[in-house]
Image (cartoon, rainbow, N blue to C red):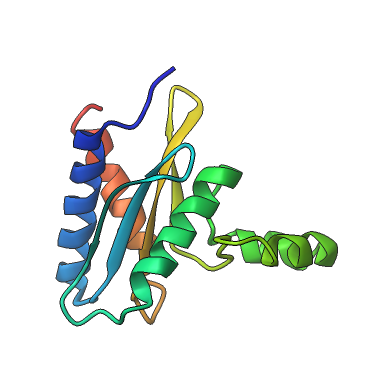
Length: 137
């Protein structure tokens, strides 16, 4: 089974920071392994103090559930009991910006981004993932 290396986590982090800067977003980025443990993180100058914990929560949620947090709110809206249950779990974040990292059909981690105000978080995370794929993980 593949794992998320520190090198790959740093590549993801660097790509996300670069994309956020191009968009003018003062973002925080967190990359976690399959167990939700932080492998790499950064908070841009000027980003609020909450952004890093939100980015980490998004990444942990995406890694734990195996899908983007962007669609999670929509999915959970149809199941209020599940929404209530997940909302009480420490670290679970039900807002866009968390994307799982999948290799060979298995979730090996996730990236979470926070700080955008107009829906930039998830595209920043996905741009970082795309850069990792082009570098032939």
